[in-house]
Length: 118
Image (cartoon, rainbow, N blue to C red; front, top):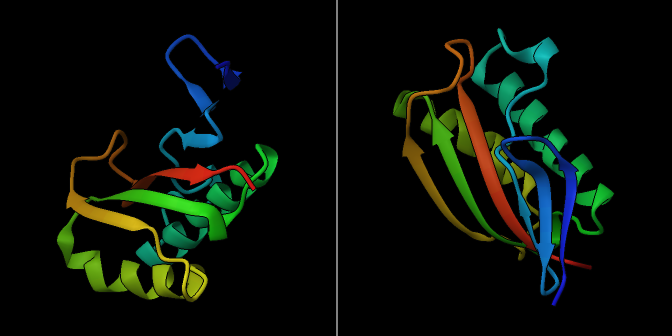
């Protein structure tokens, strides 16, 4: 069983594939959206998930699990509105959503996902 690491840096890889399972590193909004609203940041973050999944041979229909980190649970319903329009009907992954401090004060959300290879 080989382990494939993509875009590996000293502290992490952007994605790791093992046994046809893809593990993505935490994704946040793109730099151009980091001072925007929760809606804009969530859309940007999920767009980055889409791009990374495509890069490593998967898509959102193959999501297995997601862990969502929100700076404040006050944004829970706003985040869910974006999430609900992003997840394909019938393909919702197992999901957890927690409040957590962010690595940078302007960030409002982060996500880690696990997906199957297409």
